[in-house]
Structure formats: C-alpha cells, structure tokens
Image: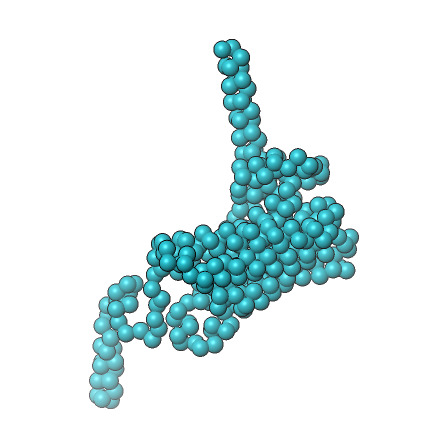
Length: 306
C-alpha cells in the first residue's frame, strides 16, 4: 500500500504545474516541423517558373470551378419542377465536389487555394508572400470571369434570364442576414483549410495530406446546403465577382460587397436591362450616384456663371 502511495506521489510530481504555452512551447522538442514564415516581399519569386506555373494552376482551377458549378445552377434554374433536376443538394455537391477534385489536383502546384479568401487568410498567417498572394488573387478572379463567360457563351438567353448564377440576397432575408451568412460560411471554409493542412497533423497522421481535400470539399458542400436559400452562397470573392461581371445586371450588384465598383461595371454596360421583378434598391449606391450628380450640376452651374 505504501509503495502505491509513493507511485502516485511521484506520478503527480512528474510534470511541473506550469507548462510552457504559445511560442515558449515551440522551443521544446517537437514531433513536427513548422514551415518558416514567408517573406512579405520576395522578388526572387518573379524570376521563378514555378511562381507563374502556380498562378496558371489557380487560373485553370477557378475557371473549371465556375464553369461546372454555374452550369449546374443553370440546369436547375431552367426547369419548372425542381424534382426533375438535381436541386439544391446537387448544386451543393457540384460546388463541393469540384473543390475536392481541384484542390487534390493543384495542391502540389499552387497549394490549391481557388479562393481569394483562402489566399488572404494564408497570407495573414505568413504562409505565402504578398507578391504571391496578389498574383493568386488576380489569376483566380480572371479564371472566374472566363469560366462564367464560357457558360454565358453556350446559353446566353438562359444565362441572362435565370440570373447567371450571380449571388443575390433572396426574398425574406435582409442584407444583414446575407452578410452574416457569408461571413460565417467563409469562416467555416478557411478554418477547415487551416485545420486540414496543419503541420501537426501532417507529421502525426501520415494519411492526412492525402485526405486534406476531402474535408475542404465537404465544408464547401455543407455551407452551400445552409446558405443557398439565403444568398446563393458566395464564400468565394472570385466566384461572386466573376458571375456578377458576366451577368452584369443591377440586381447582381445591389447585394455585392463591392457596391461602388459594382455600380461602375453596371453603368459601363449600355445594354443592361433590369427586369422589374428582380429590382432591389441599394441605398448606398443611390446616395453615391445622387451625390455625384449633385456635384456635377453644381460644377456646371458655377462654370456657366463664370
């Protein structure tokens, strides 16, 4: 009995009560290796072919992502009966499945971001340089625009009449509801990306690198199931921007985060007609346009008086 009490006493005192946390814990022996923080600016990247190859991979991946996903949306939208189509579940599977496949294909080339939100999050975590992050975002947006443009080229009338896969806040929801849904959905996605690619898991579970695209794709699938009825699910600035630019109707820009830029695109399209049933006023845009018109009229009046 005494020996058992001694064992308990020694076991309780085996570790000190104060254990290092945070950066202090990283000085001890670890069974994994944290990658070094990326430099803010890395001019040597610009002279490397792998840098441009990664950007091309992001372009192609985002192009294919928009093409497949918006084609699925158009297929569901053109049918009067949702029972005869894949429905919301099929749309969610199209988005999630394409992310799963494309992340698997491009992870070894560019990291498989396919989303400016993911790229920005990894940049803040010092996983890539500002140069690479900016290049990725530009290529992602260009790929999204091209992908949506190809869909419109295949079926222009259907594309314009059925919303073009653009994100809008649906009836019964406020813009605050849409904003909240997009913030939470994007957080779920980026959080899953960071968890699935964590260096600790890669070291301790050898199967995780192979399975990393799976939870990311499932996160996209589940978020779409939850938020398609609210906003059509963006959670990807390139996806929302590309569809809005190609569709280029006021209804697509009214609920867009980039309100001012969106109005600029819309005003630049002389052939854009807005169906009355899709009209949604945007007080911010209206106030900005009214202010610009007022300043222009005041400037013209002052010049005429002179």
